[in-house]
Image (cartoon, rainbow, N blue to C red):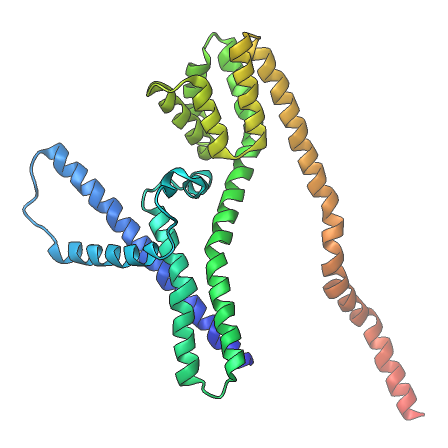
Length: 312
């Protein structure tokens, strides 16, 4: 059983590495091709040397990914559904990202268990049939949920980064509004100033500014901002901005109150994490540190007692 689990781990690791390498290679190839075409358009002439073999390889990999992704892609119209929103909330805006995601999901859910079943049937015929089926189903289940877990972790990390920088962003917005800027100009200025400290939050505000430039209303752009960020504090901020825009209340005073409230929440989250540390330390203390201390302190005495009783 242990040997089978080792073989399963090796196969899963190899498949995951291969799928990741294919996705990165295809994404890099598409990016390089886009940059090359843009450079050709700017120069106004095409280069003399071409690489048909590389283009053929890129098309072959793209075709392979399309075939795999079609098996897992939802029905038509998924671009406007919650599936596309999940990638936006994770900060992934590459148009080919859903294809890579669902292709990897198909590879880990269908192709990898199939290869494992063939390997167990040919290379390990002594394994019972029920045990082999269980391993294949376990591999398929892990392959189905692994991309979703990774996407959920990426989204959570991005939300945490934006949540920690949101009070500083509101303070900067207070400075901008008190200096005489409108909310639209303040959003543009914030997106520039926060680009280094928190690029995720700056990018979301910059997209809102672009939406307003494209003709969307301020309320609609701010609500889309809260929807993309999936951050409760940012949703409260957007609601406050919408109410201030509707009723004409003092924007700077409302922002200052909102900033104080978010700083209090950040302090409470830090205190909550600090309060959880003793509870989290109980398990490693009991399992690893206390037994070691007992061995170091009581070990010599126990050895002397054993020698004394053995002589008697």
